[in-house]
Image 1 (tube, rainbow, N blue to C red):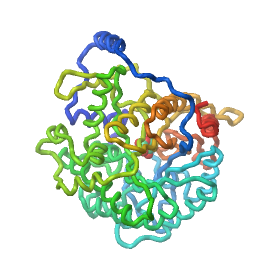
Image 2 (image 1 turned 90 degrees about the vertical axis):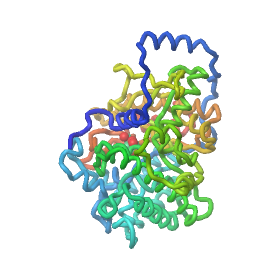
Image 3 (image 1 turned 90 degrees about the horizontal axis):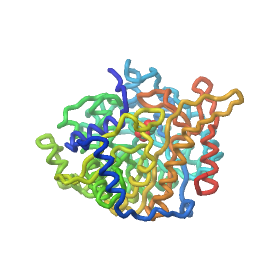
Length: 497
Ligand code: BGC
C-alpha cells in the first residue's frame, strides 16, 4: 500500500476538520495581517509568570509496548494487528518491524536506570494486550503479566512512579479476525474485560491508568487512511461507528477499572486533542478557539467529557452518524480523574468569524516552521492553549501532558557526544509555554517526554528518532543526547534551564 507522503497526523486532523465542514480562512495574507494588527491592539491578559513549575510537579518519560519491547513471540504473547501490518510489504518506510525494536523486554532494568539517571519521577508505559490475553479474550497468559510485574518492581525499587496505558494500538489480531476489531462493539467489551483483569492485578502498584492512547489517530490512520494497523480504508458510515466503539471502549474500561481496581486508583484518557490556538490573542479569537476546540474534538474528548455528540457533529455526519443509545453516551462519559494530553504541534490557528460556527481556521503558509517531520510544526504556544482550553471547556481539574517531543537527525560526533540542539530548542520553548500555563493556574500536574529512547516509530519505522537516548539498533547501545542533560537539569531545578 502506498505510504502517505506527508504528515500522517496532520493529514488526519485536517481531514477530520474537513469532514466536519469547517472551512479555512478565505482571505489573502495581507488582509489577514491587517486584521491581525487590528486585533493585536485589543486588550490582552497579563502573561507575567513567576519562574519554575509548581511544587510536586511530576516529571517523566513515555514509551509504548510495541514501539520498544520486541520479544513478540516470547512467553506466550499472541500476535497483534501491528505484527501482521509491519510484515506486509509497503507498510513501513524502512521495512523494519517491532519484532526486536529496543529489546526492552530483556533490557528493562537497564532502561529503568536510564530514567533514574535523568532524575525522572514517573514513567508512562503501555501494557501489551496480546501478552496478557493472547486471543484477546478468554484465558489469560500469566507469563505476559509477569513481565509487567517485573517492570513495576524495578520501577518501585528505583523510586519511579508507574503510569500505565492499557491500549497503545496493539490490538490482539484474534479480535480483528473474529470481530473485525473496533468495527464491532464486541471489541469495546473485550477491552473492558482486559482492563478489569489488569487493574485487578496491577493496581496495588499502578495508581494511574490511561485507557486508550490517541483514539483519534487510531480511528483516522488505522481505519480511514490505512497507514496504521489494521490498514483499513472504511467508508464514512463505518468510520463513524469505529469512532463510537473506541469511545465506548474507553468508557467501559473506566467503569471496569472503578469496579476492579484497588480504592484510590485513578483513570483517564490520553488523547491528542485537535489543538486550536487563537491566531492573535484577542478575547474574541480566544473564545472562537474554545468553540473550535470543542467542535473539532466532538467524537473524542467532547463526547467523553460531556456525554453527547455536538449538534454540528451529528448534522455533518447526517445519515452516516454513528448508531448509539443514550446508555452508550452515559458509559462513554463515565467520570474520569484526569485528562492526558499528547501535545506535539499546533493543528489550527483560529480567528473569530461572523458565521454559523463562530470561527474560521487560518491557512498555514508553506513557510510555517516545522521540525524533522513535515507534520511536526513548531508552535510552542499549543502547549499553553491546549491544556487551558481543556481545563476551561470541561472544568477539568487534573491534566497530564502524556507526550511531547520531537524527532531529529543528529549523528554522534567523533567523541561520542550527540548535539541534538533542535530537540533542546523545541523542548525549551514548549516547556516555557507549559510553565506559562501552570503559573496561570491551569491544573497540569505532570509531563511525560516522548520519548525515553529512540524506538519503532510506526510507519516511519526506525528512521524517525524521538529519544533522549540514541539507540544503535544493531548493538542496542543507548547513548544520552544533549537533550538528556537538558531534561535532567530541568527536572533537578523544577524549572527550565
Ligand atoms: C504516539 C506515539 C508516537 C509519537 C510520535 C504519538 O502519536 O502516541 O506512539 O511515537 O506520537 O510520533
